[in-house]
Image 1 (cartoon, rainbow, N blue to C red):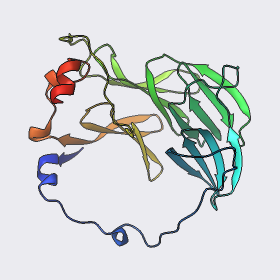
Image 2 (cartoon, rainbow, N blue to C red):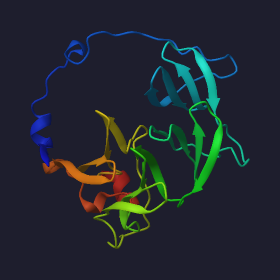
Image 3 (cartoon, rainbow, N blue to C red):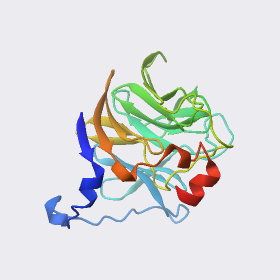
Image 4 (cartoon, one colour):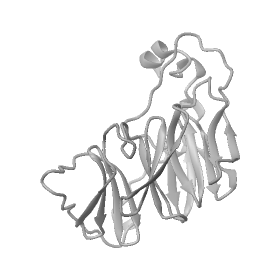
Length: 241
């Protein structure tokens, strides 16, 4: 795997111009109806000529010109509704969009019609797809044996990623700590990557039924000591972490 020397990287900071990474910039307004005021956007997923937007208010489909198309699912307690909205993901193999609820994953077609739902453990934090493999990550404290599960369409476990903190006894009653925009999964060149949760220093490449270490961060003096991890000692984490 690639080794990234974090301490050395941040001592060699340099300015990056937008022209270094982009040829053109275009500003496109999301023309949402008046009754759907979109504020914070958490996820933006392009599929063909459409955009799927996970906003604070719900999940919506737009054209790539910003024209509103439809709402995907809705908040509620009904069998086709979600009570919480952790994240959304697109299964490009089956052409389905999933909404990660508290204890279920709800599946809709790309036009917003409900298909089915699947029960999950209530510690599942984020989900995404690599081909047709459903990748589910947990919170990553000492009570979770694995950081991630890869499940096929029959719900068989294809691979797991062990949790290095599993079984370590916490010093006090622990808790969780996440950045407001923390992500677990990233897409690049049609490949899914997993980083996290928490202060995990490893990036995994998830490609279909294959899972391997892609890169690791050598954090040096910036590595958070175990005694300041939120799950290990919540009070010490907030004072020093």
